[in-house]
Length: 420
Image 1 (cartoon, rainbow, N blue to C red):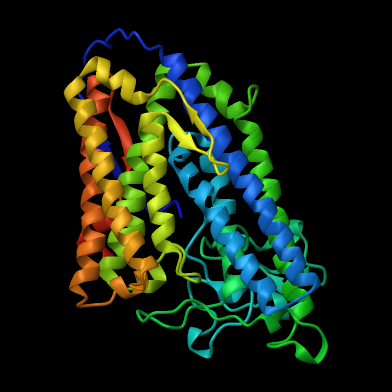
Image 2: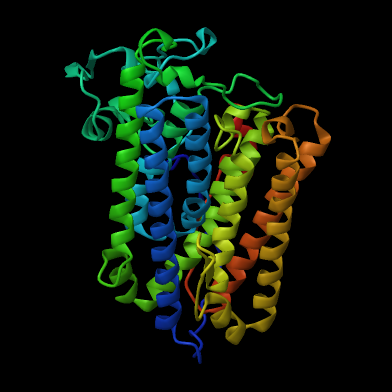
C-alpha cells in the first residue's frame, strides 16, 4: 500500500549525458512492450480466475473452491512482475491501489473471528461486514447495499471514509473471500474458509452465502475491468506509452525510479523488513493464502525484467529488446556487470525463500520470533534488495541523470519509528 514511505534520495554525479549506440527510444519501447505483455497476461489470468469464480458460485463444491484458489495464485505470477512499473508512472500509481492494496481490515467485507475485534478509533468500519449488512450508514450517508455490484465496491466501499485499510477491491479482497482469515499465527497453515460458505439452502455456512457469492463475483469482475483499462494504457497509442515516448530522459528516469523504489522502500522495507521486525504474519503480502513467498519472488523478477529488457509470458514466449543494461554497459561496463550480478544474487535469495516455503517452511513460520533460519532467509533477500538499489544509484550516475527520489521505509531508514 502506498502512502507510508519516507523519501530516499539517490545521490548522483551531475555530468554531461553520454552518447549511446543503443537509442533511448528503443529501450523505452522494450519497457513499454514488456508492460503491455505483463498487463495482458494479468488480464488473461484474471479472466481465468473469473471463470473459476463463476463455477464456484454457480455450482459450489470443495473442488470448485480449490480450482478458484489455484487460478488466483496463477493470476499473481504476471501481475507481481508488473509492480516494477509503479512509482515512475503516475498512470500506474493512481490506479494501483484499486487492485493490490494491502493490508486490509477484512471485517469490512465479511465475517471474522471474534478475536478480530470491532470498530476502532482509526477505522469505524473495520467490522462492518457488508456481506451480512444490506443497509448501513457510511460517513453520515445511508447506503443501500442490497445488490452488491462492482460500482458499489469501487465507488462506496473501497477506502471507505478515506481509510486506507478499508480495502474492498482487488486481489487481496478476492483472496480473503477464497481463503478466509489465516488464524494459524506463525504456525503452518493458510486460511480455511469452507466451500460451504458458497453453498445454497441448509448447506450454507456462516450465513449470507448468496451475498458472499455476489461480492466475490463483483470483485472479480471489477479486477478484470481494471486490468483491461491498464493494458490499454500500454498499447501503441496508450497514454502510459505515449507519455514516456514524449520525453526520453524522463522515460529512462521512470524506469530507474520504479526499479529503485520497488527494490528498496516497498519490497525490502514495507513487505519484508517490517514483518521481520514485528514478527507479525499480518504483515505478509498474501497473508490469507500463504502465497507471500511467490509474490516476493515475482516482484524481484519484475525489477530484473526491466533492467535486462526481457519478460517471459505465461504462454512461454519471450518479449525482449534493447535494455537499460545495454545503456549502462555502454556508459560504464563495470556498473552494468555489478548490477546484473546483484540482481541475479537477489533472485537467488528470493528463490531460497520460495523453495523453503514450497517445501513446508511457510513464510509466516519464518517470521516467528526467535526463528533464526527464517530470519536469515528473509534478511538475505532484504540485504540483496538494498545492495542492488545502491547499484541502481550508480547506474543513474553512469547515465548522467539528475538525482532520483526512491520510495523509502521507516523499517530501513528510521527503525525506532516502527515501534512508536
